[in-house]
Image (cartoon, rainbow, N blue to C red; front, side):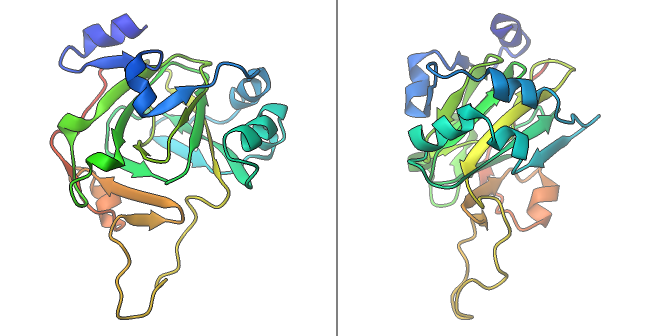
Length: 222
């Protein structure tokens, strides 16, 4: 599949997460049995178009793998395990959490990734983004400094992707978290979620996302 995706996207350099380049962004978690989470994930709803994000799913959170990951990756802190399922194929945004995120998908996916040290103020150049192919069933943990967004599909079937984060990440911030004379950082979008959008992503910009991605809104052709 990776070779096929590369041939369909000749202008993009697409790495595998097994490539040493990925070590700047995260790690592959090979020594864990993810059969139970994958079985549960395969039953979660897949929309006909667009994406659906569920932050917390009891079935996924109750697996032995989730408990192991909570301590191995998150140091025992409270976590939430949910999913992002859908059909996205564009970059659209970059978000980061200053804490790890664990992903595993029932389908092959591509992730567009950046690194917060490469931010120029609140802007990020598309030329600094790298694309990574994640084979189905491959569990990865991305670093808190890794910028990412929803997976990109590699087929018309879409994808189902587990998302594990610290508890309460992506919940709504209060309208005025600071005193009235101090503005909220313009990239702070939700609790534990900093985000910049591509200017073409009008839906997120209308919701207050800062249009800080500079360059083409990258697309994975299938």
